[in-house]
Image (cartoon, rainbow, N blue to C red):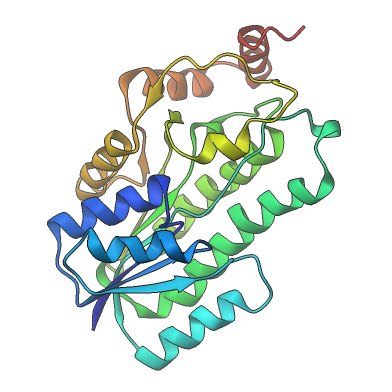
Length: 254
């Protein structure tokens, strides 16, 4: 059985990956994972491929073990894995509750690594893994410090594993967008309003289209938009201390 697995599939980037990948490729079944079962069920009416809804909080005890047990029972060929689960909080480090700080690490890092690890035995030559990352992976970002650090981990992890798998025919790529108009912001923006400047928003449709093209080109990192690619270039050329100073000035922080 050939399947595709999508985490964070109930909304935003995850849902858009479901739409675009199933529009151009056939599977025997797709597995969609997220906390909100009702939104997952709605996908059955949007695509003409059998959908298996898996309502899971990937940070809950036993959640990844439950997913692994499904894989071990079905023994599918996982042609595509999209890890889109994740969240961020915009706040000063000392003002954000510890539970939220550790929650970002649990979902953005631990769950992503765990899902990738237990899925790996079912990936075959030609399989593709998309790790949804962020522009914040390329530099330290004050007031998004823990979220940015989790995304820096994802970038490093993804590129390293992709290199390890170079002879297997399995590809892994980090998808690193800038600001994207999704539900992410409903949770990320806090009452203290520490982030005030957003230079440009992209749509999930734009980011996913670019990611699918970049995967076909054999890239291990996908960055959508000329302006975002220029920002990435600057983070490589300029000292990070200066990059952070520019960021703070944009946010009107002294």
